[in-house]
Figure 1 (cartoon, one colour):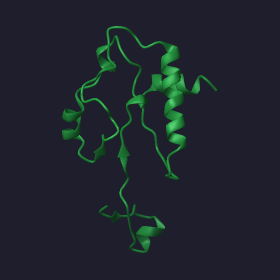
Figure 2 (cartoon, rainbow, N blue to C red):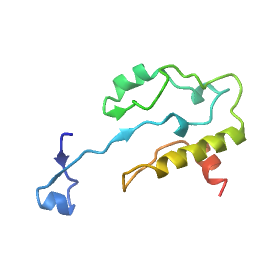
Figure 3 (spheres, rainbow, N blue to C red):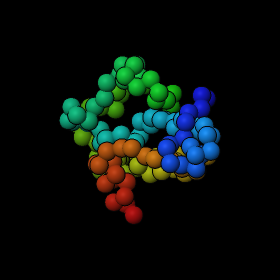
Length: 113
């Protein structure tokens, strides 16, 4: 990976040390609740990847949105999907991870605990 300048004010920046850039890994199960509303669907990954070339879409299995239907995903299914995401996240080797997702997904995730 190409290294980049550390954030200004950080000890690394003050020392002139370059750091690895952040990795943006996209996961399908971490997306908004599926179905019914157009805003809950997504465009083909091949199209999105052109707009976000620094994002890693390699773990997305389907180019098209195979999960979007006219029927809303059940609360139970969204909760199960959220737990599966947490299980995957727990196995990651990184020490510092930021998760970016949607409010409905977060409500289903944290509402279980």
